[in-house]
Length: 66
Image (cartoon, rainbow, N blue to C red):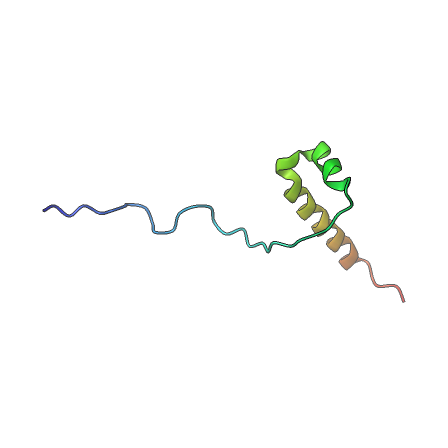
């Protein structure tokens, strides 16, 4: 019997981890439709991620009011 390797590829396949955590966020009823109208349904999560990161950056750069 001849020994053939089962696979030449590494054991791990598929998309690499994105280093993200799923979070449920409740938005007003019209907001998802407004986002979809601008970026499309396939880019909704990316849009929300970018908006949150930008808001965090702005708030972290601004000193807290006392």
